[in-house]
Length: 209
Image (cartoon, rainbow, N blue to C red; front, side, top):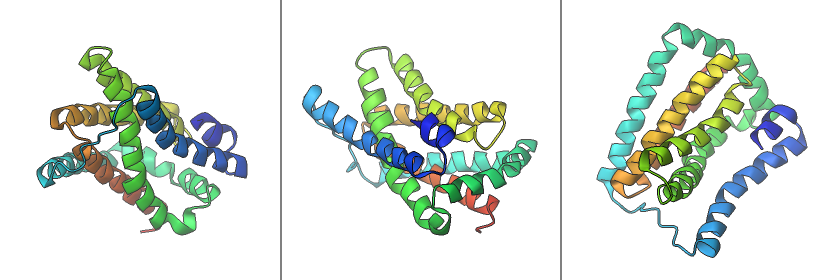
């Protein structure tokens, strides 16, 4: 789906429609599979408390600090060189004029959707079938693959794989955090902070801030 809406059919109504369909399926499929196929509860543990949330926020802050550090290296120049492509893609998706709302949706709502899918559903079920390190690694690779496709449209392929690998490492950290805390709250908070950091960097690259 990422290849279709972001590479083969970018910026047209069908590609945008498939983007929406994919995001809806990230919610629908785990719900259907968990309740009607696996016959389980979809317990997210979001009421664990502020200490769990703050650990997630702290981890997210560390990751954002690393991203800002990356922007101060020669790799940051490669990121800046892709600013024009980023702005063209965002405009093609029809959200450039509403970027703040789009950024908030991605950072708050979409991050939770991805955490439910990749951590609670994918990693959570893999942990029942294979060893923990294999489960965390496979879920991280799956999480990374989508981002490699997306990032490759803005940067050289080598840079796309590097950034996608960083995303995969983040996914592994979040699934480990989910297991340690027995909750998705910390992972969600960390993911939210990281996405907010990415959106701020993106806005600066596009001259919106």
